[in-house]
Length: 141
Image 1: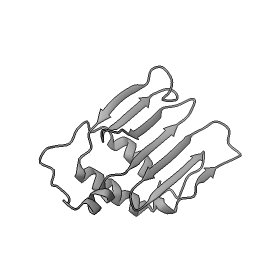
Image 2: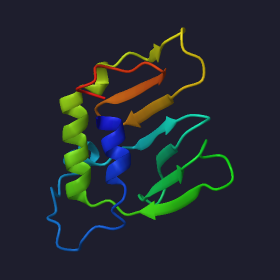
Image 3: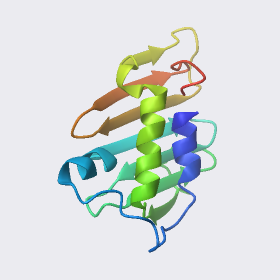
């Protein structure tokens, strides 16, 4: 649910100016905003999605309804994420315990199908995980 929730949550195109400032402390800001973030899910014969943190702090959201996001027909949007949204996302990451996910989830008995990846780094934690037709526990994914 975490990976698909992140991608589904990217439909918001911008935050509001009225969102509260979470903290003026540089240490807490590091925990709210990731240093790097990239996630994707999809496959050859179905919809694919990709979200990547850009150097300006926005997210680049790519969606192709028929195949990989590197193929023609991919739609690309930039999304501004508020501090409040980043904090909610970090809490979801912690709740899903992505920091303990295995590096590789692969079902060798299934060809093609769905591939996914998650790469995220904060000042205090990081996760690198990917899979092909296999996933972390359903309640977390």
